[in-house]
Length: 73
Image (cartoon, rainbow, N blue to C red):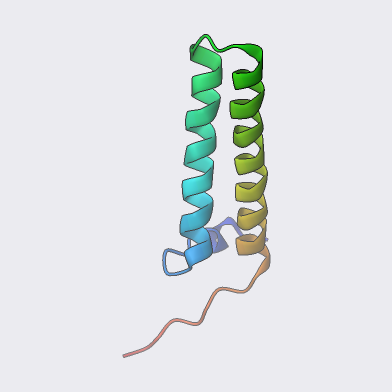
């Protein structure tokens, strides 16, 4: 697998993976730096974990699939 396959700005999966991973980082930051009660910590942490897993799955799909052929003008 080549990491150059990961950067596919024309593929919507690329942008969904970037958005989910950014949201996961923001949610993890909230859990780490804010004082939340137990249930709020579990809910926000669960969302962060699920976003990270879905984002990682999308990145895996980008690395596994062949990139779309480039158009030649």
